[in-house]
Image (cartoon, rainbow, N blue to C red; front, side):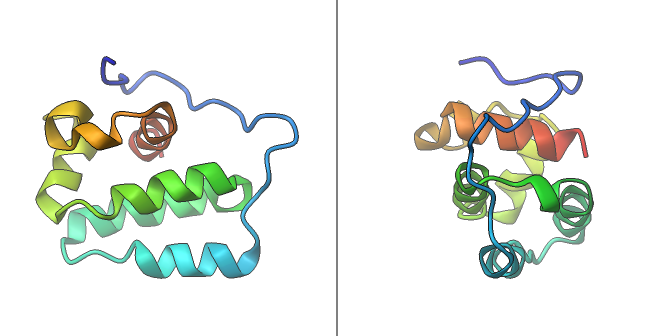
Length: 105
């Protein structure tokens, strides 16, 4: 799968997709705190734009991205490396969708 470009708009949540509830969103925000300021800035802007419309699937994908090291995550934000080179197990459509949303915050 090829990495998404910056100009690719994120897909709208599918009809009937379950949105994250307030408690799950709060836990996800806590989970997304990073040690690298640049990552925190990207993630904070992401939550400002998408918090009210995040689905359970997108939340899971974002949580999976948070397993990466700060440097790998920044490389993905800046499109320095494709996802399959950073972590092949994360080369999934849901993760690509969230990564596109992070880049288009």
